[in-house]
Amino acid sequence: LTRIGSRVRALDSYRLSASVIEETHARWRHDPAWIFARKYYVPAGPWISAIGLQVAVAFEQKDPDRIGKNVAGTVATMLGVAPKGGPFAKNYWDAKPKLALKNGTLDLTNRAQPVFYPGVWNPDDRITWLIMSDWDPNAQRAVADQFLASSVPDVGQRHRRLEFHGF
Image (cartoon, rainbow, N blue to C red; front, side, top):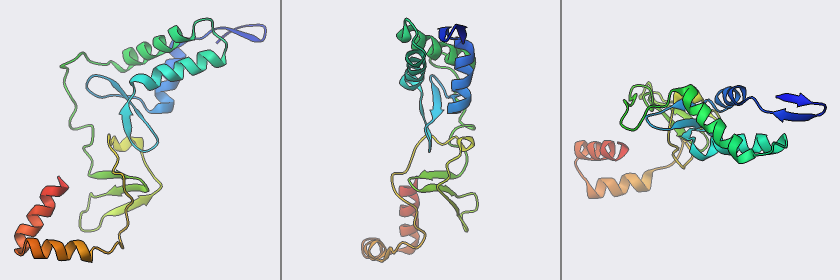
């Protein structure tokens, strides 16, 4: 920020962009930048411009729209956003055996003994989707099991079908 008296004269777009990257855990993912939205990553497109716009308005800048767009462009440049058709890091995004749920993160690294972290979502897990249900290891599934047993009597087929639906 460049100040004249008590008023802010100009914002440093580079520093503001660096702060946005740090605070939102912004990362590059194929074409756009993505930010961590409390529980999982989402495309950053409108969000970064909106953050720049809010900061510009808060500091009474003359052209807040331009500053918002400038911040979005600077963040993209700093992250090294690739052009369309650039390589996609499949080993980086959604690569860990973890699921983001409404009430926490389920770690399936050891599928025999999954570990649930209630109320915890970590940007380092790089999850780009959220399962819109709660994890409840004590949930009763008798009705579902009875239905599956009556419609798919072979145990092996039933397990394959459940695995297929899991994918």
